[in-house]
Amino acid sequence: MTTSAKKRIWGWFMFDWASQPYNTLLLTFIFGPYFAELVTAQYVADGMEVDLAKASAQSMWGWVLTISGLLIALSAPVLGAVADSTGRKLPYIWVFSVLYVIGAAGTWHADPQGFSLPLVMGLFIVGLIGMEFATIFTNAMLPDLGTREEIGRISGSGWAMGYWGGLLALVFALLFLAENSEGRTLIGLSPLGGLDSEQREGTRFVGVFSAIWFILFMVPFYIWVRDSKDRPARTKGVIAAGLRNLGRTIKRLPKSPSLANYLASSMLYRDALNGMYTFGGVYAVGVLGWSVVDVGVFGILAVIGGAIAAYLGGRADSRFGPKPVILVSIIALIIAAISIVMITPTSIFGFAVLDEGVVAGRTASDIAFYLAGILVGAAGGTIQSASRTMMVRQANPNRMTEAFGLYALAGKATSFLAPGLIALVTTLSGSQRIGVTPLIGLFLLGLVLLLWVKPDGEDASVWESGT
Image (cartoon, rainbow, N blue to C red; front, side):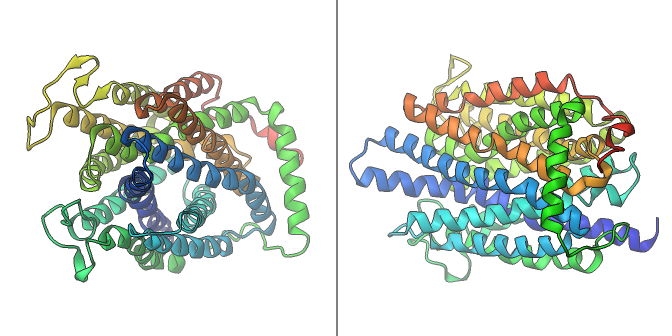
């Protein structure tokens, strides 16, 4: 492997490192729970009963993710098809990187003393769309980074890099930015740089910090990563050509059942996983009464588990292929999902526990939730890395960006359904615990559909016509 090839791979790794804080800090462990706190406080101030206010806040967060998921699902395949027709990916990554930065920094406007809910929701959605679309185009570069046998290891190492980047960003945010109800960070300090804890400026600055992090660490990506020269760039008629090719790909899906089943399977299990990530912190705040800092500690453990497992899973992927790795990961996630639903402040799987601190002030229920979170992080890191490797095996090699656009569509088709189901079930039941149970069913359905997926994808003859 030449030095330039190594740099290209390391540059590609840096996208995962740079973009991960949007998932770790904003979507999951800090801003999401903080948003739920703000909305809950507003509902209580308006006279709503506390438990109902918490459930309503979870529903609101679900609708935010539902809207963003719909926008991504409807646009991703078209953008991917157009990108394949132009033969270029980097210009799209530039554009969506700008949206990432604007949206991440915009969460600063979530002022507890009064903020525009539509504005904050809108900016968050803009950033999330930027992150997701940029990911589509960087994922589509994976086949160009190594041989068929190497890409599993490369994907796993990249995903592990993302987790370590997210972990470092999360630790920094917890130590120096995000404050608890007493206005102190995890180590008892006031937020960095004189940020006003009464205005929750430390927690709000996490979005700005994520934007700065992204800008800084994307520099190696833009220096070392270039579009493949195998296909010449086109500018004329690319939209029409892209749409025609997308139409042919969709019509061909019944003739490529392995790809169709994989898209359906991943649609279900990846969105169930996203539901666990995006509602985990909100759930812990509402059900276990955790603070944002408590959720952050939970996040550190989950991210460490994910980083280690993604690296090891990449090795397993290269040796055994992605399908066995995905199967084992889904089973682990089903166990974790059931465990989470069965943990309450006073019981674990129906067995009563003392509402007292047993380790470092943590109750048995807290510790059980931490363990479930570690399992989610480990299985989640492994399954996401193996899933994009599996997509490379299933897709038409001549339409890889379009394929990852469909992959994003599959990932978002129930990404608006899963949050919507959680929001709906939570609203109808008035219970956060009951509200997250649809995720278990999505995992099970994804597991069943995966059984019909060929480990190495379709025969080459399937893609010979109409490529």
